[in-house]
Image (cartoon, rainbow, N blue to C red; front, top):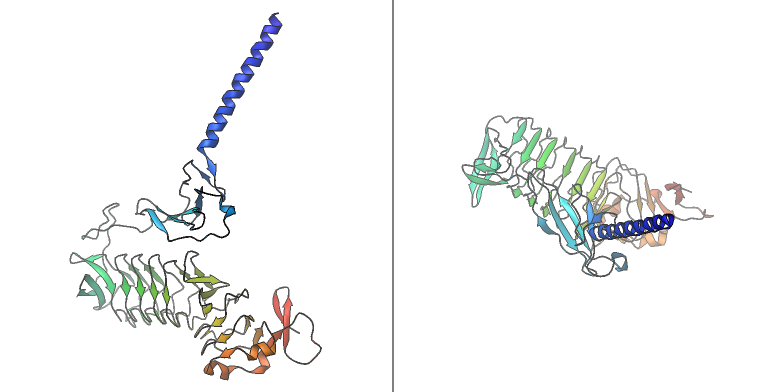
Amino acid sequence: MKMLMLLLSVVLLLSLTSCDFLETLAQKQAETTVSDNGTTAPPNGETTAPSDGEVTSSTPSVDKPEDCEGHDFGEWIELEAPSCVADGVKKHICRNCEYEERRVISGENKHTYSTNNKCILCEREIIASAGLVYKEVDDGYEVSGYDGNLPTEVVIAPYYNGKPVVGIGSMAFVLCRTPLISIEIPSGVTSIGDMAFYGCESLTNVIIGDGVMNIDNYAFAGCTSLTSITIPNGMMGIGEGVFSGCTSLTDIKISDSVTSIGKGVFSSCANLTSIIVDAGNTVYHSAGNCLIETESKILLFGCKSSIIPNDGSVTRIGEFAFYGFNILTDIVIPDSVTRIDDSAISWSSLTSVYYGGTAEDWSKISIGDVTYKLFGTDYIYYYTEIEPTEDGNYWHYVDGVPTKW
């Protein structure tokens, strides 16, 4: 009898424990959902902001994301503004299924300065370099030049005489007489004028504030020591030839806000190897280290490491796309290309053009007059997978490398 009572007690205890466990488990599952990218989210679908630049997904309000035939995201919406003491958060929503993605906005250098050039949040103070010359304009001041010798590292403060510094004037530092190495441009500056830093051959580092919306023509042309540049969020326009002749420039990153890029921006940048456009840009995209205008399918700029996409996303090679790349010895042009503009490619060192179609297809391509004169039939090769039996210039891929038959 005692044994029976003990057995019943054990069964009852196990039953109660199991119920408690299942109830706890159900609560945990209700508290946490998992998005399709593997991040955990609370029941309202929001995700905790990840590290800078990482995209997180919230639970959609309708069907699961995989049921969507193709996400069509709207504009980014800022949910929390970034500051120097905390990152911000933005989101965009699919127009088809209401699926939502969120991204952290870095708070680095997001200072809010008062007229005494001190941040009101962290009290960081900016002291402007001596020797700068200012010109009063409608909404504040612009840096118009410098008087005497500048330091090698120039700092522009957000305010001057109690008014904001809103621009860097045309030719402000042109052919800089001092060995200018670096310059910090505050976020209050909205424009950098024509040829502002033209020919500053010692300039290696430029910090462009997030407030800059336009860089005008040839602003950094001939800055032969400049190695990299990041176009900040918020910038909309990049003028003609802005980085032309920057022979040490190796990589460029373009934000999703840029909607206008002028001709010859990277012409004669012989050592450029990386071109990246933010995935959220609706006007331009990058592929194979090529800058492409998405809707028109024009390849605007390439570099010595470019591989022109053969998926049909490029039908035209634009003016100055590969101009000044004198170390470019060969190039693969896909058969989707129907037009090659004037001065599209600098041919001085080119020894092989590997075309993805036939000789007949090549003859139908519209080629600009200047470019046409530079072509020679001796170095144009036509693609064929099968070894040809007739004489002529043909090529195929061997382990992914263009190889002549």
